[in-house]
Image 1 (tube, rainbow, N blue to C red):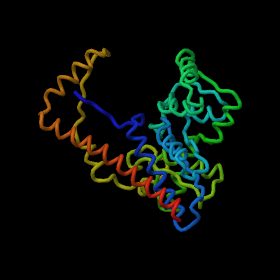
Image 2 (cartoon, rainbow, N blue to C red):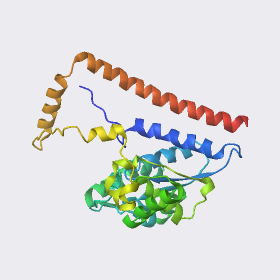
Image 3 (tube, rainbow, N blue to C red):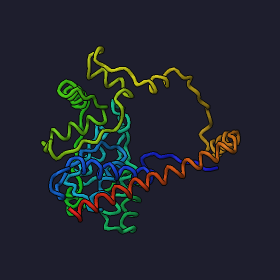
Image 4 (cartoon, rainbow, N blue to C red):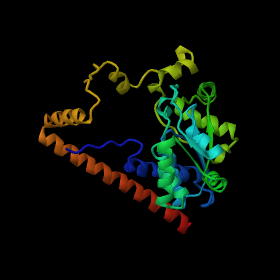
Length: 293
């Protein structure tokens, strides 16, 4: 049995996200100096997409500021403001993908902040696991702020950003993307050299749309998304025991045709090669652009 999920902690996803930064940098700097610096405002809860930006910068892409954009669940924002990484209860918001109290990918960045010392990182994370809190000294906080700045958007700021951007530009963003719009405006970043990364189709977040726009201005759901709402909901209740979950997965997996499993495995392999190929192509293009211009 082989299971995989391309969620925000999966390295394959982070690898693919690195290409966003190269692609958008090329688009923004087309026809200007090869060393033009671009800032990125990144909606983030699990610190995956913005970690990809950090890797892109470490690879040599001329990125200025990486802006950590969050909502009221501001564990990351508080860290870059105070140097304290402290778990707090998650608050339910209109930007649900950010409603988390621990960022899974953040430990990967802390490894570099610890100068790649696995012993130091282990001390930090052991302390966090024990006390739900860890902290760094002011020198390390200064280094972290050289890598990232941050902003936390309130519910009213998110709604206002969605509303104003639609009225001014006829461009509708989801509530997560709106946190980055809020940050770009509040930090007064240059519109010419700032990229706001969008995260999802706004139609997925109807509660936020209803708060931001009059009913007659809310666009219809895309056909494929609308069809999902007409499908039956299926669920299976299981005891909270690992053995029960494992047994259920094994039984479910055995009911799948062998050929289908082989096709799925082939598709997964092709997907990984596609990601790697895309990344290699973008990186090659950047290096050619940098050294041959």
